[in-house]
Image 1 (cartoon, one colour):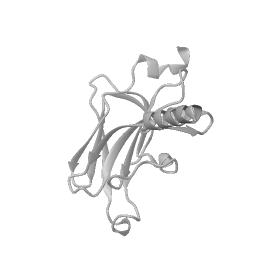
Image 2 (spheres, helix red, strand yellow):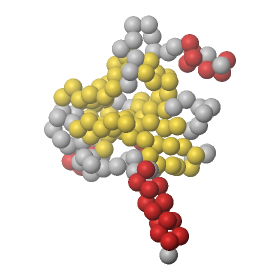
Image 3 (tube, rainbow, N blue to C red):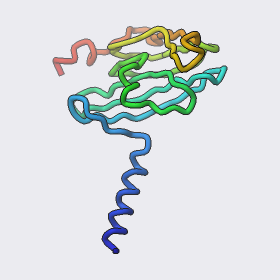
Image 4 (cartoon, rainbow, N blue to C red):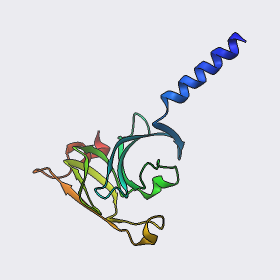
Length: 152
């Protein structure tokens, strides 16, 4: 009885500690952690920044999603990130107005970017969010590490 209680307590602790971080398998183990969530001015959608980490030899990745309010990001949703980059610094998201999202960053190596979002779940594809990128750096988007990542 005591050992069962100990195992149950340990399992509850593990589940509670992993509430916002998920492990997925896609070519190896990858952690996924929600960093920031910002509600649109009209409260119809939320922009979400998430961080991925595949391990010590790979740079931390940053993803931006748009979701319906309160909705978590499923494994299926992860392939539909509006923004996918690594070596990010100064990453921020902000709503400029209803249906207009700005992704701001100082430095980043951007793999994918989509400048709009829409869903059949919201106004039958008629609610469209425009997404803009804003590099805040005066010296360019890449640093010495990201210009020659294979030389390190």
